[in-house]
Length: 412
Image (cartoon, rainbow, N blue to C red; front, side):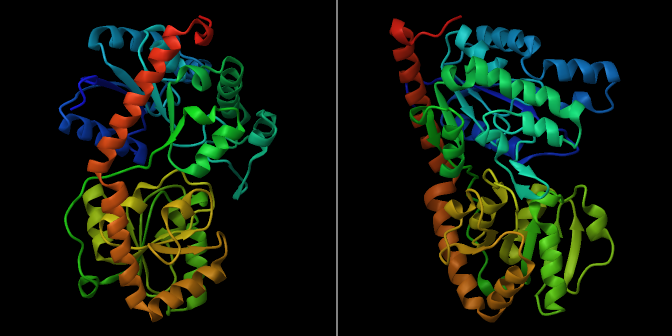
């Protein structure tokens, strides 16, 4: 254990229990990794469950507090005073924690690391997606007027306004940009997006998501499922593209299992193309069990994915990934090494790639073996622990330098 790091505080705004996120799983796993290194881990958390069936008054107060929360600021400062962490690691802040968490760390003189799991600090809907296509208007214009005009969050102006306000307030105050000692991006693509919006390149570190090692994968002849899709059933995940591809294949596409839930559930709960089966929402162990049986995971996303945990889970099972050539996915899925890349939103190309995979199953197995090697080298929890410690040590050093140098102190 690193002598300088004995206590780490993890700050996270949990998603709703009824709609869990991979971000929640990442925070839990990183906490487990740190505890395994002998580090005491404290959790400051707020949950979106409190918004379930909330009154209009509570929802209004939440919206007003989205740009900056006095309650979270005071709560985290009290938590820091009681727990006395050596460093604070902030994950999701939307909508209850807010960027006031960074200010709380700064005012408490505690080093602060922030992981940005999506593009919420740039784009109100967090996905840089509009009308089913990637959109960079708020980044290119350095303003959120376009998001307001297009009602980018939940197609509602009223819902978009508080998030747009939080982005504009951050761009003015630059709390996240200046007071976070290290900002973690999940891919180099995301890091470039952040630099384009004014983040300092020297403060950004790229660190992928990781999961624990769960044993050796099954052999190719033990796998009885051709393809699997795992994810939220929503437009940006590209599910319609897969269904169109399987319709075009007309019974020649191999068996496809769809796992997940979301607004497009009616699309898969009814009539499906031949060989496509909808399995509904599954627990994490059940998802892994299906992945272990699969010959390939399909990720047909049409948005700039952050770092899909399902991709790493597939690699851990020795399963190659066929993914859209978009955003940071080509950094994770190496073409013809650990998987294949396909033009996003193109059912014909997806159908052609799926058909070629069925004709050359040996190549799928070889890519799966290389995917498992990539997992052990880059994405297993043991590797993640050392990366976290290196990042924390860097943040502590930068924080000490900033505090000791009058020229780098920020205004209160």
